[in-house]
Length: 97
View 1 (spheres, rainbow, N blue to C red):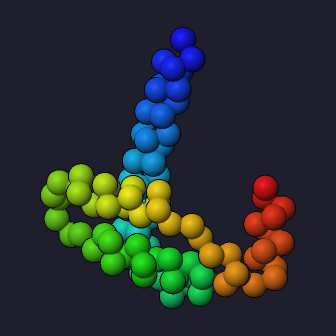
View 2: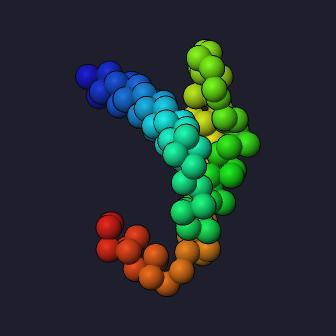
């Protein structure tokens, strides 16, 4: 029974990464569509630019499974470097934990 639970938990985690990748794609598109990239903080803008190298702007409907998988692999392999955050942002991040 424990191994079945572990396999189910693994599948849930894998699916969660895909959901986060899809949400990131939607956020990237929203920032471009609303033309609000100039309102992003320096830290967020760096992440935005990095993610845009993985998923380019799309204007027409097309299959996105490759982009989703690329973002998923990025999320799994990437650790955010919080050293770039200002002191105020670090306090906010630690308060949210």
